[in-house]
Length: 253
Image 1 (cartoon, rainbow, N blue to C red):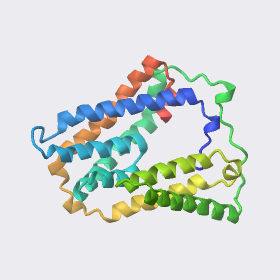
Image 2 (image 1 turned 60 degrees about the vertical axis):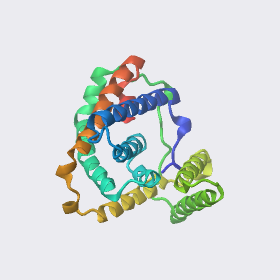
Image 3 (image 1 turned 90 degrees about the vertical axis):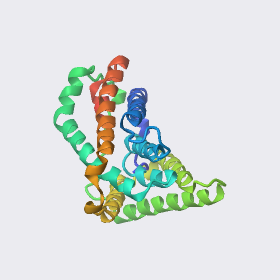
């Protein structure tokens, strides 16, 4: 998915401001929510709730695929892992419904309108109706090669957390290839990447037993997620208004 990014066409300054206001909003709300919703504020078991905070930070700054890596990094118990993904499905579902049906009008009303310079307008190259099969094969082979090299790097780097090394190497190599014109012309790499994300999501779903989740006994986590998601949205809008970031850019970010 990263291989097909076109960073050269992005309005970098505006996008960076929107990203960092979103990042700051998430961190602030996760931290505040930790002290509000932690059921064991004075016990050593609050360490478990800190792991929930770590996983949430990763999800809402980088996406749901991060949860697998962060789970291993912080040694999150399997029951908490499944609870978070289940609650996240509920809250982010509501969030996306809000954004899709009401977000556009609301953001444009509360924030400045977008002022696009000619250099800000992204005009994609003409897309072929059907990519040659060999391009699909090359794209998948390239992704596999990046994964293999990243795994090899994790074996060489002398630290305990090899997962973190793999993720950093994957990201760095993929973004490097995104600046290579022959790779850009392959096409379909985003679609291939999205397919593997679907496989990842399916693999999570297969290990869930709804009857064992005890959803009603852990509603503080549900409230924590809702507080973080919608609270960070409100805070990001306020920061964007202060920094004069247009509504369209904030909506996309």
